[in-house]
Each structure stands twice: as structure tokens, then as C-alpha cells.
Amino acid sequence: MRVMVVGSGGREYAIGRALHQDKNVEKIYFAPGNGGTFELGENVEVADYRDLAKFAKEEGIDLTIVGPEAPLVEGIVDIFKEEGLTIFGPSQKAALLEGSKIYMKNFLKRRGIPTARYIETDTMEEASEFIDELEPPIVVKADGLCAGKGVIIAQSQEEAKEAAARMLSGEAFGPAGQRVVIEEFLDGYELSIFAISDGERYVILPAAQDHKRLLDGDQGPNTGGMGAYAPTPLIDDELYKKIEERIVAPTIEGMREEGTPFEGVLFVGLMIVDGEPYVLEYNVRFGDPECEVLMPLLKTPASELFYKAATKRLDELEIEFWDKYAVGVVLASENYPYGKSKPSEIIVDEIVHQDLAQHAHICYAGVSLIEGKLFATGGRVLVCVGIGDTIKEARDYAYMLTGQVHFAGKKFRSDIAYQALKADAS
Image (cartoon, rainbow, N blue to C red; front, side, top):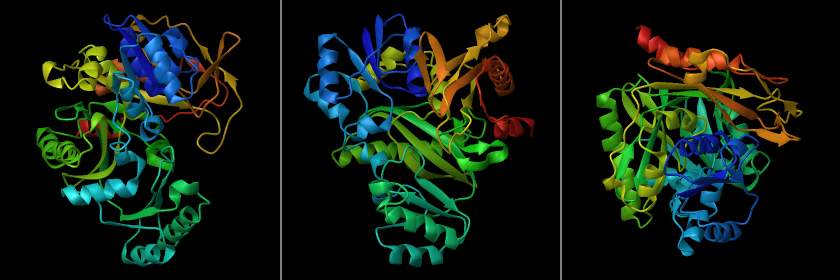
């Protein structure tokens, strides 16, 4: 089987790595890939989706997997399907679950799926009136895609109004913020739930937990994610059942009933409040860095999972996962998430510790290959992933690996999976 992975980050590297270990896969293409994906397959520079579909036909590509949200929202799946190609991901209409916060919140309301109280608006007057009704913190969200940065958690009513004003004026996020969602803050802990769906059936993957804040102890600004682990002990069978019955099943059923069947990865960002799940957001692709810790846990060949889902045959597959834990620690560049950093050469020490070589690996993200050398050129540079029989063991391997990687300005959180370790200890 020939497979193409669309995207250039650590998520796409992780998918490619799983495919690279899959005996069913003959060749992997990345469009466009990054400096690290060269070791897994061939990078392809084709920006236009119709040209990319043409390339897929010419190269006899059997399956295309879309990593990031932007191509999905822009309709790449529809274009490939028009050409008779097999592609994993939701249609442009179904991708509105992530492409528009307003569409998402209204869908939740229509289907009776639990979420925070909210309003949608494009006027400062309405925004101010609702903000005055809420106790801080207050959540302000831009309607459109903002690369994971369009959510502000304001600590006062005044700060919420300032954030709304900056969005509505176009100053903060351009057209993506000119309609906003204002919602109450839910106080609990976050979980990431992923379901693979073929439009009718679905399978829920092990629950993961992301760490969005830049600094230890969940301090500092929000980022695209500084680390993740899976599975998490912060969920039990009872909570899984609530999430499936109240959220995942009605979402898949609702999308089908509304004429926009969801095919691909449904990523539900949840807040758990006193044991009850509430939807914070939907994403229509794997999270990053959650994907980096979920892929190594997948025992079923990756090509079979993605291909069966893309061809509406998920019922033919028994999906299995290794009875292990995975922890991923993001190494970021010096100025992340505030601005760009100077390119810096990446040096990875030779791993002489046999246990570490067997239980940890790197997923490359914001890297470029320059004259045969790897340079850190993005915000989140790479993810050090550890695998173990316990969360602590996986975490120890991940952090051991961070010590083997060097580049100027390297920074990372030292407390990934701290909530899980606390839960285990108690």
C-alpha cells in the first residue's frame, strides 16, 4: 500500500512513523512533511489540493491521511473524493465542527450535548451585557481557526471585554475573530477523547491529557500543547460510559441525521466537573501532541485502521492497543509562543542506554533539513516520547531522552503527567 500524509508537524511525523512500522505499507509520501520526515518517506511540495489529488493518482497512492485542520476546513477531502481517491478525514461541511466555534456550540445546543452556557455575537454591546452576567474567569473564543490560539481565559470582566473588543475589531485574529463566543468558565480538569468514525460506526481510543500552558504547574500563556500522555487514570469505566452515551454517540448520530456524516478523527476536548463531562470544543483531526502518544499504543496496523475508516468498513476491524503508557514532552524554541526564534542546529547524542533506545523516540515537528543537518526552525521543535508499563516509567524515559537532545534556546515543561502521578499516588 502507498500512503500519503498531509501536513508538516509532529502529529504527521507520528502517523508516518506508525505507517513506517506497518508491513502493509510499501511507501509513504508527506505533503509537505518536515526535515525529519525524510527518514520515513518522501516529501512532496504541492500546495494546491487539486494538483495534490492529481499527484496521488499518478503515483498510485491508495490512501491519503490528512493531519491538520486547515486543509479539512478548506475542503481537501471533497476534492480527493471527486477524483475517486480514498482519503481519511471529514468533508468540508463536517469540518465546520472545528472551523466555526459558533456552528459547534449551536450543534451542541441542538443535540442536547452538555457544554458551558454561552452566547454568540458580532457586537460589543451583546458581548458586554453577557460578560456582566458572568463571574470571572470568563472564556472568549474567536469563531474561526486561529491555530489553537483563539481562546482567551479572562480573569476579570474588564479583561474579557478587552479581549472581545480586540477580536471583534479584527485586531486580534483578523476575520476569524469578527464573530465571537462568550461562555462561562467550567472549573474541573481537561481530558482529550478521540473517536475514529466511518460516518456510522466509531471506536473510542484511550483517553489522553494535554498540557496547554507554557510553564510548569499550568502557568503562563496557552500554547498548542507542551506535552501529553495516554491513557490517563483520570477516567474510569463509568466516566467513559457517560462520555460515549452523552457526547460521542449523539455527535456521530447527529452529524449523520443532519446530512453531514462525520468520517475521520473526532477529537472532543472535555472538561470534567464533579465527575460530569462537558464539551469545551470539537476538533476534526488528531490533537498535537496527543497523536504522538496515541500512535505508539496502537497495536492494530495503522494502515488498516485508517483505510477501513475511510472506506466505511470499520465494523470489519477489531482494534487493539498495547497495554502500555506513553508520555510525550515537547521541546520548544526559545521565543515560543511569543514569536519566531533564530534557526538552531539540533544535536542528538548517541543513545547508548539500550533500555532508552527501546522505550523512547523522537517525533520531529518544527525542523528543517539544511545542508544535511537538522535545524530547529519552528515553535514546537520536536516531541520526546517515552513508553512504559507505568506512567512514571514512560515519563522517566521521555525525560531521559530530552537530555539527549540539544539546540540553542531549548525549553520544555518538567511536569508532564503530574496530575496522573498524583492520582496514582493517592
